[in-house]
Image 1 (cartoon, helix red, strand yellow):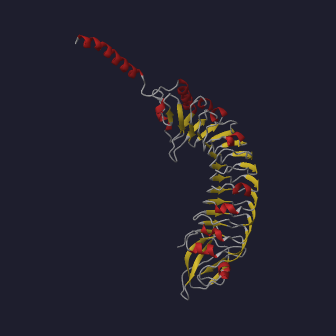
Image 2: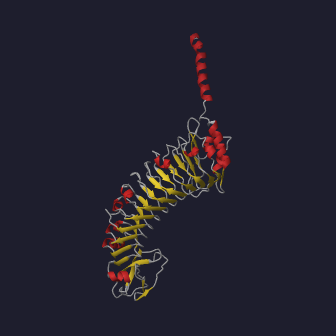
Length: 432
């Protein structure tokens, strides 16, 4: 018994030591002083816009790792900083972008800023933070040139809808881990860098002032938008390699040459090439995916309308030089409701065989007999509507109209009896 009593003080001491160790070990690591001061500087630089309460939880008498938008590592360093209320429609923040403060968050891996009124510039000290993988500052007033250096760990960069100017740094498109790059809606100029070695999946450079041609792009690209720039030249060689494309928008540039037939065989759901200078005949290498949208309007494409477009849900061919009759496959798709939109105006088409209506009537409208009824609506322009009609013999029916516009006049059949040569503008798009 005495021996056991003699051992008890040692047990008690060991137990006390364990309890003391537990007591002095914090439940969560204390935020590093450098990061603490950096967050204070961020708070001083930025403010909530009216209606936003994002900074309400930023009370520095408590643990900053519990602030809205802040996540910390076990070592007490800030690793995620999401500034602003991410809910759709929520007001953002205002103030000067706090580059100096953010550059001190050396462990930061994710930095985002909701759309708001934050101005200033983006420095290399922030963009090149060594652990930064995600950088999204879309929809603010950040201006100046893009940084000359970026983190080699970046996978996503979204600087869209700001006021950046100057050229795209070549180093940005050589980051080996970069998958998503969105620089749209800025004032970037010059050429796209010649070497694009990043394994990009999503590349969006639309609505800038970029010029020159399109360099070879990685075959990994699935989403490509270069619309609304001043890009020019031929793109067939570039597009043929992008066999994974599901979204392509090159609209509003000065591209020329033929549209490569291979792109029609890709699993592409949205093909937008409008308002360029593409020419020649369309020779699709396959049928488009069912339900896709194709806009080739306002180019100089010629020849026959390809039947391979019949699998699309919406087709815009207006403002070209197509000739001949509209293929029966396209008419059948429209009549069956599989193709919901078809724009054909301002071409040189000579016929369209709508069921129950002579081809000449379908173009000119003068041979459509009275006793017809609206059965299906066919969009052929923004303001005019071609309506599929079904002949009902001698039966008289209510107000009727049928319009198709190409190089001829636009014709209106009214009340099943009279045809007027007028420009038709029908504003409710649905008449049934």
